[in-house]
Image (tube, rainbow, N blue to C red; front, side, top):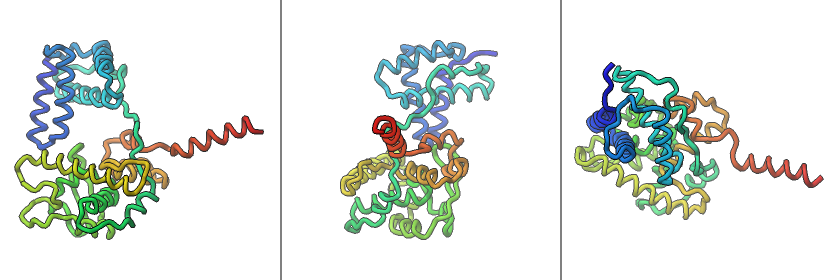
Amino acid sequence: MKEKNLTSFMQKLIVSFLQEGRLGTAHVYQSTYNRIKSFTGGRPLKFNELTPSWLKAFQNYLLSYQLQWNTISTYMRMLRAVYFRAVDEGITIEYPRLFHCVYTGTRVTVKRAVDAQVLQHLYNKQIPQNTKMERARKLFLLLFMLRGIPFVDIAYLRRCDLNGNILTYRRRKTGTWITVRVEPEAMKLIQALKSTDIHSPYLFPFIQKYGRNEYHQYQYALRIFNYQLKRLSELLGTHISLSSYSARHSWATIANYQNYQQELISNAMGHSSVKVTETYFKVHSDEQINEMNRGILKYTFQQ
C-alpha cells in the first residue's frame, strides 16, 4: 500500500469542511494542523511516521507550551479522526491501539452547570424589556428549554425548521438530526426572540446578512451573548459565571440528577455516544462529596 502524506490529507479535509459550511470544525482541524506543522518544523508528516513514540513526543511538545490537558486532548482527537478517516479510505493501514499512549479524554475543569434554583431565579427575574440583557436572559432559558441546544445550532436555525410545535434541525458539529417538541414556555420565548425580517431565511436575527461572512456574524453574536450573560451572572449574584455552554451543561446535569437513563440523555442531546455525555456531569455533586468527607472526618476524629 502506498503511504501518503498525512498533513496534505488533513488539508484536503479542512477544505471539504469549509465547503460544507462546517467552519467551526474546519477551525479546530486547522489549529491542529498548525501545531503539527510547528512540531515537525514545517516538514510534511507521513502516515507511517505516526507511531506511539511520535505521539508521545508531540504530547510532550504541547505540554511544554503550558497547554491545558483538554486542549491537548482536542488536538489528539482531531489527529485521531484524520487517521481513522484515512484508514477507512484505504490510504493507510490501521495500527492497533495507536492513540492509547496519549491523552484523549475530557476533564471538567470548570463547573458550568447551574442548579434548578438558579434557573428558577433567572426565569422569574424582572429586567427592563427590550434590553440586551433581557434578550440574553430569554435566550439562555430558551437554550435550556430546547434540551440544551448549542448556540451555534440556534443561530443557524431556519424558519422552515420550526413546523408548528416541532423543531427539526441538523447539528452543525456532528451532523446528527434532532427533533424537539417545543413546549409552551419555550414557544413564548421563540415568539419574543425571533427575527422580524420576513426576508431572512433564519428564525433568529443573529445572522442578519444572509450569505455574507455568516460565520463571523455568528461569532460576533456569541461574544455579545456571553458578555451579557456575564453581566447577568453578576446581577443574579451566582457564584457560577453563566455562558452559552451553561444551559447545555445544566440541562444534562439536572436530567442526570433526576435519574433519567444516561442513554436517553445522550440521545436527547445528539451525542455520538454516552461517553461524550458523561463529560457533562458527575454522578454526585461536589457538595454531596464534600458533605460525605465532612461526615467521615467527624465520625473518625470527634467521637
